[in-house]
Image (tube, rainbow, N blue to C red; front, side, top):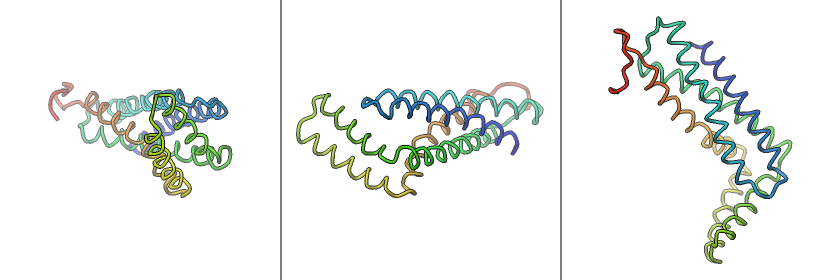
Length: 180
């Protein structure tokens, strides 16, 4: 199981990390960053499709075509953790080495979007205050790591759960989709 998790976790991690770097490079000097979030989450879903592949590979090649919901979820969650860790490490390098002013640009873009959507002066002030708190927290590397994990890991865990529900097989050979 360990080799399976590492291989498919690294594949997913490479995909999501490369797409994140390309997306950030493309939008970094573009004042409109709104599409980067959509691209980012789409790349996570694409990369985490390897959770399905990893669980199925383990089930079919190493476990005689059988897998419980719990075992399938454990494999998927671990693949997600490996890929997410790689993503976090790549983001830390990208942020600290290439984009140390990212939060300044992010805050400015968020305020522009709020203003463009018709936010009142009071709403803009409230939004600016919230963003300033986040920007201050982002000065702490531990918070950068936690925020980055919160961005990707829940997506992976959700996909791991869905994959486990879809790919589990009982000893009688039937796919068990309706019971948990």
